[in-house]
Structure formats: C-alpha cells, structure tokens
Amino acid sequence: MKQLLMKHSAPIFAVITLTLLFNACNWSSEQGPVSMNSIQKAQQRGSFPTDEYEIIDITSQNIHQYNKAPVFSINVLPRVDLSKTYSDAIRPYDQLTLQVVDAGNDSGITSQDKLPAQFGPIEVPQTGRISIPYVGEFNVLGKEIADVQNEIQEAYTPVFNTARVSLNRTSRVPLTANVIGIANAPGQQTIDRKGVTLADLVAKSSGTSQEPFTCEYILHRGQQSYKLNNMELTTKNLLAQDSDILEIRKSSDRSITLLGAVNRPGSYPFPNYSSQLDDFIGAGSGFRSDSANLSGVFVFRKTPANTTDIYRFDMRDPAGVIASSSFSVHGNDIIYVTEAPLTRWNRTIRNILPFSQVSNFSQFGY
Image (cartoon, rainbow, N blue to C red; front, side, top):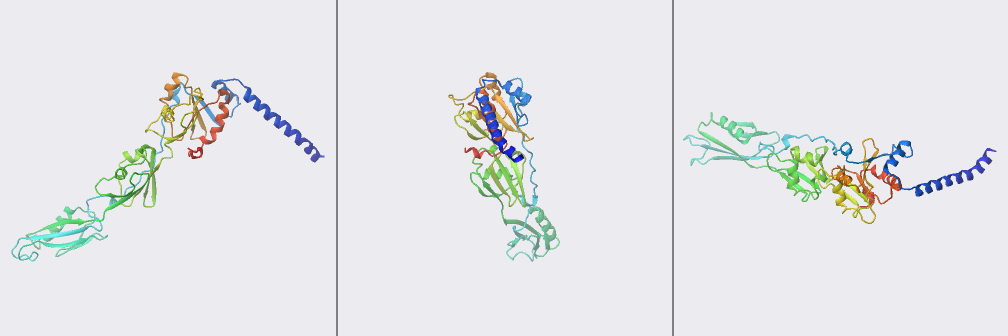
C-alpha cells in the first residue's frame, strides 16, 4: 500500500514542482523596475539570502565609511648572513701577496740589489689561517687587509727591525646571485660592492618587464623562501648575499577583472600603487554607449570572512562619477558594468558571485 501511494504521488509532486518553477520565472520577468532600496529591503525581509552578499550603495554621504585603502600582508623579511654579503674583509679563496722591503745592510730577506722580497700568491683557506715566512701563521678571515698588514709588520719588526711589509689582494672569487622570472635581462648578477641590495639586483637585470608595483618577488635563500612585495623590496634595504635566487613574477593581488558593458573587458594590472575605480573604467576604454546601464556599476569584493561585499555606483549622477574617482580598488576585485534593467540585477549578481570568491580569473578567458 505504501509503495502504491508513493508510485501515484511522484507524478503529482513533479507537476507541482514544475508549476512553481514556471510561476517563479514569470514573476521575475514580469516585475516592473524597482530601486536598489527595494532590493535591500527585500534582503532585510529575507527575500534574498543576506549571508551570500551585501549590496552597498556608494554615495557622497557614505563613501568615507566604505572607501578603505588596500591592506597588504606583512611578509616575513629574510634573515641576512653578513659573512655572505659583500665586504672588503678577507674571505676564503682570496689570493694575497706579501712584499717585504728591508734597507738594512745585514738584511737576510731582500737580495743584494735591495729588491723587495715577494711571497705569494697565498690562497686563504676556509680555516682562514695563512703562513708567512719567518713569522709563522696568522688568522686573517674576516679581517681588513690593512689590519692584517699591521699584524705582520709587528711580527717582523723584532726580527728585521728595518723591514717594511705590504700586503695586497690580487684576486678573489666573486659573490653572485641569480635573477629569474619577468626581469628584462634575467641571469647571474655579481655582488661587487658593499651594500648591494635585492633592489640593486633587479636594477642590474634592467628592471621588470611590467610595472614594478604589479610584481611580487620570491627570494630563495638557502633552504628558505620569502615572499616580498615591491614596497618591501625597495624600502627595506634588504642586502643581497651569495647564492641568492630572486624570482620575479606577476603579483597575484595587483590586478582586477573588468566585465560587462565596457569596450574592452578583461584582466587589468594596477596602473599605480593606489588605484581608483575610474582608473579601470578608463583602462577598459569606457562604457559601451549602446548597452551600458550606468545606474549599475558594481564592485565585487571578497571579505576576510569569505563573503562578498558588492558596492554599487550610479554613474548617471555626477556625485556617483565623483565617488568613483576616489573609491580605492583592491586586488582581485571584479568590476562589472551591467546591461540589465534593475529587476535582473539580482540574477546577474548571483551569476558573478561564485567568481568573486576566487583569486585567479583566468577562467574568464582574458
């Protein structure tokens, strides 16, 4: 009996479901124009699920409340091993030469014609200890040439009181770092002076192939990797060290997606450090005059709570145009210029919402 009842009720349930869907479609297509306030009131009544998104009308009265500058994450800065940065101090594998001049009549160092005695080249081992004729071993690692010369002179004086020594470096193994990625001239760069920074490595590589503030930098140092933004790279005086690998790539949070009734939809990098809504409208060559509904210019923004805020600008109103010129855009925002009449905004919003929750917009095909 139970199976028979279920068998007869299934077609009835299907008919009821189709009827409700048909009526819902008719309702959505037959409604007249409504205001954004009506949509927001419907949200408050529960007609639209308010946990999905919040629509915020931007006006001259509330723009200061909602216009927030982008907040960039503070990255962990790399630690520096000063022994691997450039220094004039002696380091392993430096080649040194020692000259000794002794004007004394009974000198046992110089030849009879008083030519200087020369010892070397002397290669500095990793232990840092070198052997000097007549006076023994010296630890020279990390010391300046002049300081080591003074030590040797002090050791020679008791033995050859008229001798004068001169210590020089003839060659050394250069410190190098590699720049890879979207540099104009990627490759190996020499750390050839004191104070060479990661920013200097980028300059030695002829800069980046796109605007620097749209780039991010991954420093591979030893067994660690560090992510840096352009501001950190250029202001933190981060010293380069031997064997660094600096990878430059397109930043994942310095571009937006422009969709809808604009002449050139697509993905656009930030034109400068702080970019406003009208910067990107201009980048898209403006609105399509034949179809754009200027009362519906939307900015979709993912929130830290993994919801989406939607900001609307009415560009028919001069106040809306002025607001767009000062409204800060964040990385990964979606800017959408609608073609739809007001009654279909909600349908459009629901279609875009899934894409506003992701940070990579390559699926749009731009």
